Image (tube, rainbow, N blue to C red):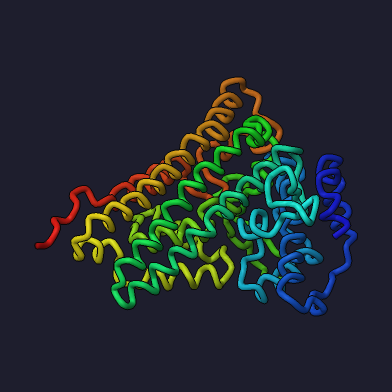
Length: 367
């Protein structure tokens, strides 16, 4: 906890690795409840990312010392999460209220652990969290739709879908806060490398060796929005199918989610397709509400595309044309997401397959 709480200073002073080498191998067996395990996973994840990327893109660590690797592995097994910093760690489990009696709004929220990047680091993780919070009512709506479908309750399905549509619109509005709180140059040049993983990453092509755990390097993806359980829940509910590489990548990202989140997505995914049901029941109201959900998800994905262009593509191109890569990620990840996806191709693919789910002709009303 001392290392994790002081991480930014230790990375910037290039002293984190030396201190990790002096760490004893701690036993995680005294951690008894879920909150303690999640906090330990979060702390070890931040320290591990700092350790690997302390020297920037040119000298990543190729192995994680046993003092980090072994407890991290054991805790990860207990939680059903991989031993790398996931979206469920850095976004969902990395916040606290400045005033515990105040509201969950950005001015009253802080990170538990931070990377270099100052306010842009706080803004990136907290805005992402607020987007996930905006999804909450929509997840409730998704469950209402699921239960209403058991009895083909059209009114119940409609009410649930209205909640989903409103929730997706609120997520998109909340996402716009990113521009107020995150500087593109700081995100690209300082912060981004610390959420990069060791799978499909040219900086660590063989993966990372976990000392005391495995004799071979392990390949794991960094945290990314593709690990958002909420978005994948909405895809599953709305029968949105992502094909080829995009679909394979999104399915693999479920392994980086808490098991209960993964199970909900899989439960929704195996239900008979909602889109087919709506096409068969000849309700123009239901069709319109379904389409408003899909349209809102298309809008969210389109906005994500333009945000990625602003925060990754444009700063990356500047770094390349000036011949002076920024100190962090530089140009090695310019076309690759932190999760290892081929960035713009992936984002356009998921946006386009979402758009295909729209019902273009409303079902004719039955007499």
